Image (cartoon, rainbow, N blue to C red; front, side):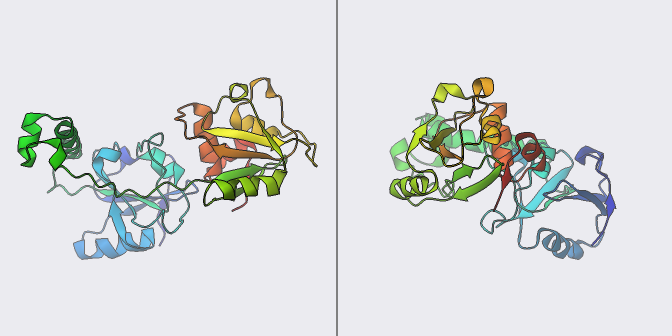
Amino acid sequence: MTGTQDQAITPDQLTPEQYMVVYPDGRREIHPWPEDESARLPLMKRHVEGYIEYVPPASHTLQTHEVVVNEEGMVNDLPPNWPGSRLIGYDLRQQPPLHGNVLIVPHNPDDPPMEAQRRNARKHDNLFALALAGDREALAALGVQSPDQITVIDTRPQPRVYLYLIHPDGRVERYEPQGKEAARTWVEEKIGHAYRMHPEAHVVRAYAALYAVNPKDRTPNVPASIGLGVWGMRHALGPVVLMPTGQEDETLLHDRLHRALNGDPEAQRETGLTPAW
């Protein structure tokens, strides 16, 4: 299925008769939106290569168009779509990027406006937050008398935790450990006895940087230093392991490193990192 390719057009320039496909590599295609309603669902399923899911309006900034993705994109390891996520105003500091092709389709005029849906979503979320805090009106609205009567079930999938091995030439290996002992064993297998770079030596705090005490490869690790934002660019020698610290990190350097490790070509060019998975 082909359409007009135009990298300059933005979602707010689309007409109600157009929709856009944004691919993980940044390509954008514009197509005419079918007048026949029965043709729309099959068309969207073909584009996302599976079952569709509408991204909640509260999660993006579009006013006249909706966002549709593959509902199992992350589960099925579809490539992260950084360009599409940024294009719709997705908050990438609070949540991972959308995965697979991103569709930007016309909003159904019979539904409430996008901003109204966002307000309702915020109001709904606030209701539960107020009730859990003991607000009487919120508790009454939910039909309970105390926060103890509210059961909170977190159905969000647990985030996957990875260790990364950065070689001096920029190649990156990824490992998903099953427990601390597995992580320790993997680090020892890769670099032997390791030191941790002092946390104050680099800008990015979301990762601890481990490097070998006696590295076999004594090449300065420039890509790891750039990715972490090492002060004064004092490079570790040989491979460097990045281990998540669990710290919140809203720095631009962490955002760039995160994008590079998740397939963003621009961030990979800037850091010199080339993931091998």
